[in-house]
Length: 285
Image (cartoon, rainbow, N blue to C red):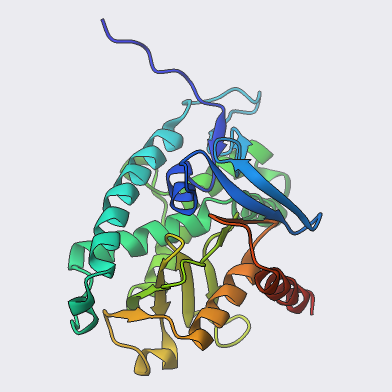
């Protein structure tokens, strides 16, 4: 007789399997709080980046409609992430791949672009922000829970039965579908990530184009997408090693986009903490 699956109410918006790529023991990471300017030497991966009932559909009585529907699907996506991360790690340190013009397979490219869009949209700031925006547009016509359910379907339209037209997921995926995708290696193993691990930039305010997108996969490997004019500077599907200028810009972008927490395998250097503070100051301008 099979056991009934235990219901989950604490849901991680940055997957634990992802944060393990920035840990030396698979249990904890170094964390730096931007709000408090405080270091946490052993931050538990289990308790990092989580929120209660984040992905749950609720009725007007605040009762769950179908418990853990999206959470269970996201868990399957995270299993695939582990698989494709392992493939990426193996390929990134084969120096002959620096010469290939087809570093990622078609399947790998498709996975990474879909995964990146899911990670961009699954954070509380996006879900809550879109819910508030839609609620302001529809007024009292729909309840808050009805609007939030609609938002969840829009940002994570994983089930065919729940898909809606003009959803946020399809829109974002369309923006990056033609971008060049490249892997970058940092031999110093000094990459860090955040509670909002995707950083992107558009050429101008309000532009429907993403010119640059950063995603640190581990402490030494990142995926970068290039759009717009930058596609002329970088190959369509290549492997590179970071130079010092590229690494600096990458770290600045990741720090700029963080909500509150920075995560890394080792204690950040004074230079990195100052870089993060400078990036955050520019965020206020």
